[in-house]
Image (cartoon, rainbow over all chains, first blue to last red; front, top):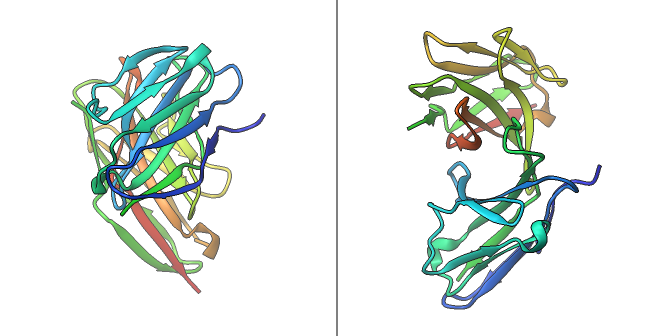
Length: 114
Length: 114
């Protein structure tokens, strides 16, 4: 089966600009996650979708981050405006259902804010 | 709340030597445990997982981990490492009551030298 697709792979922007990341999960996977991985740290969950509904966005900085999953398939994560501390790898993952154990991750988008 | 501690941020080792990457977790309820590997510029790949049953779990590429409930540990071991094992390794925990949430440790960088 095809894996979790993410684009772009790399992005460099200036602070206060906006940026968007795209994720296409494995076909049929109901649950989709966005994680933020800052250099030297483990991935941190930003938001979780079940189909096209948000299950958990408690760690999402809502003043600047937003995410949507239209039609319960693809998802977009947006940052507006970006700050220097947003520099990180943004990982998307999916799983078949809420009771599955172990996700499938995409290759990530490396964001550098200068 | 659950947490994961990976005590070693970096582990240098020579090729064909044994290695152990340490992982300790904290949780008041029963847990599922995972090890993920991240090769340079790639996403996270599931290496092995403990859900129940035998406390010793193995991966297809020679790694093994043992769940020790009394010591709340899930250390990763390999008797003989290869250059290709050079990567970042993340331990992660998920509670049996909330199988949506993976909580990651900060990672251990395994560097294998010839």
